[in-house]
Image 1 (tube, one colour):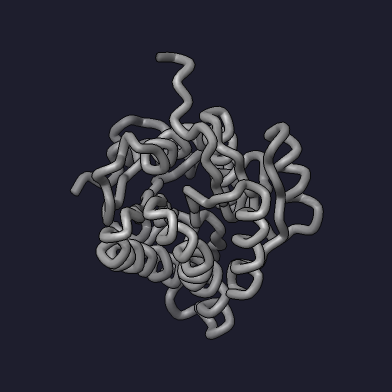
Image 2: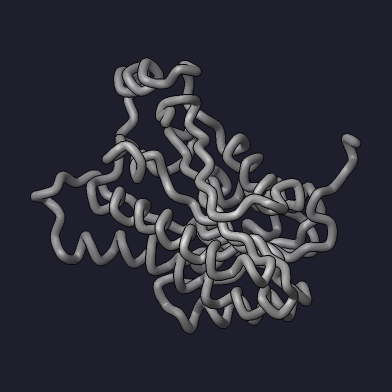
Length: 254
């Protein structure tokens, strides 16, 4: 049982996956450990290829701006050429800005909504035809506890709005795609230790405050989020669609 590979022979696309300490790479690594071949997408030049190489043989890194529908379509086509199929999409690419309501400019709003919400739509549209044709697929989107509780620690109201929009988008897509056996679900992480989302703003005092508000008394790890993604990507969740799964140590129980 320990050697069972849940994603053997499957093809996966993970956006925002080039940073080795990030959620995207953690999910790609867990998928790869379970037999998937992964396409790691990101903005930064040579970084996606380096991240794919770090996973081992059989994976590819692609430069892709998820705000550009044509770039998303090209990435999906390259993944199909490499793997023959796309079974899993993880919409992980995102940006955050620690701004208050009256500080949010139109440019701030556009940037955060474009990457987080429009990017999720664009990449999903790029893979849905392939999944529909195969009558199989799992789309996973990264939302956030900030979408549920009305604000986060490091993201402003426009970030909460974008992540809340992801929940609505995923649920509507799940309803629409279910007859084609394509599932769509969201993950809502709380504070996850070790990622770049804090932008260097974390202090010991702030960490203590955060931990005090988490019933489990600690931040989550990227591996714990990746484990949830593995469940949603695999047939273990074959009857799960339109769901939002909290990975937050109990910090929001609702």
